[in-house]
Amino acid sequence: MNSTFLQPFLSYGAGKGRTYALNLESSYDWNGEQWTVPVNLSLSQIIPLGKQLTSVSLGGRVYLDKPPGGPDWGMRLVFVLLFPQ
Image 1 (cartoon, one colour):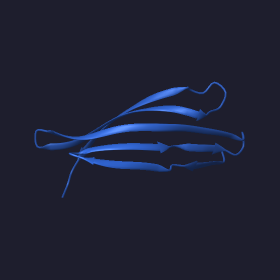
Image 2: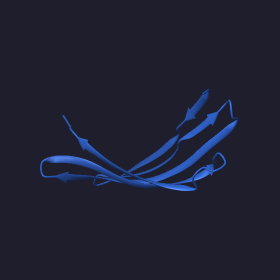
Image 3: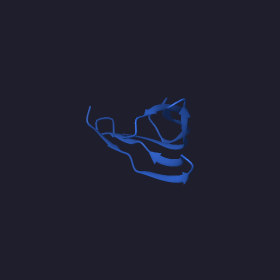
């Protein structure tokens, strides 16, 4: 498969461990001549679990362009353990 992947993003740190993010995860299939362009919007929050810092993010996505039969929307839940120095 010959493809190109682009991921432009905007991120805003709102303070108190909160971040808002907007990004595209665009890919182009050169063989099929087809774009897949989801737009993602998410909110993340740093949360301490005992002594362990974590980042939890929840977001949704809609597709501006997709192959026939592709999804219309999606959701993402991310859980990250943080190990600051």
